[in-house]
Image 1: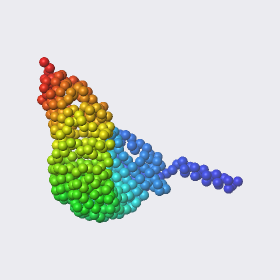
Image 2: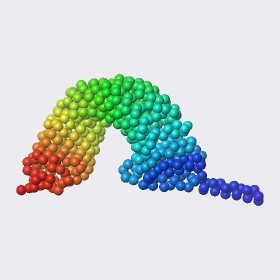
Image 3: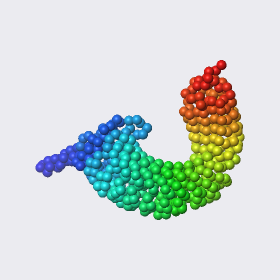
Image 4: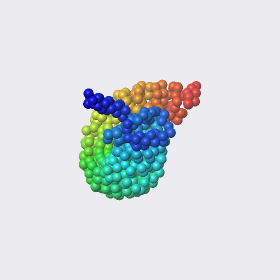
Length: 472
């Protein structure tokens, strides 16, 4: 009988413990200190942070007994109240078993880089993205430890240069410092991070030539250095990435010279962006080997004919605009693509009757820009076949058709048909657009009620009504 009583007592004690779980006192203290540093939480993200079981709180994960191993709080950019305001409390250093800190899209989190992270021996993942952290990255950032797998600080306001000691974070597979205010040169030491699969430094203020650091990378798949101030040529060491690289984005810099032919040897390349640079000469014939490329942007350079025939199975996005090409027609490999959604061939020397252009697939198109060419005919057969088109630009051509017969996709937001030979009146359906330019055509009649300025309609034959002068 006595043994039964002891057994039942122990069973009851287990049940009590199971129903009144208590997380580690240090972890709870650290989390509550973090909560106290938050001054605004309009969406109630931290409302569940009460009681003794912090392992059940929103965003908190415990995988090691009663110790917190992960803190994941992510705002909602599409919702005005999906943010947190405040600072990151250094008391989070009490979470000794933390292996992942994910504070993303919180928008109003301020302060400097949290150096207290140095004291967390198990830390693998640091995602502090799209907040308002500022100041220089610390020179001793290597104290994060060689065990660190991911360092992602995208979308903050960090300044200064990239610390040389980042090269000592030898365990990194992903380094993302994009969208900050970082200046200076790209440290040569980054080349020692042999395990990198992703390197994103875009949208900063980095300058000088890109160093020859890429021959040691054997797993790199994503390289984005766009929207900086890099100069010089594309480093030859990038050729060593031909078997692994899927995304190469070097657009919006001041790179110059000829596009190297070795880029045509990249077997797995999905996206290549070299736009808004100072490249000259012809596009290498080796580009015909890029059979798997889906997104190609060479716009806003000084490239010349001939353009190579591409042997792609299907291109999704193509932009060759504003070079010195004289393509004559839209390339067949574009016309035959079954999956294309964005086509930009502005100022490419195209001379066709658009009425006769019949692409294999129009269903996926969401943006077409054929501006500044010598295109005649009518876009009606093309546009009446699109279901999800958002933007159509064909300014500065010789299009001639009745605008009133043009069917607008319900998704259409941007229409530029200025400087053509378009006839007829302006249909009321333009009121649903966000951008419109019909100036300098041969349109006539009274304008429908519109939110657009007079500049959208000037230079026509006999348009009248607000915002133009009243009809007589």
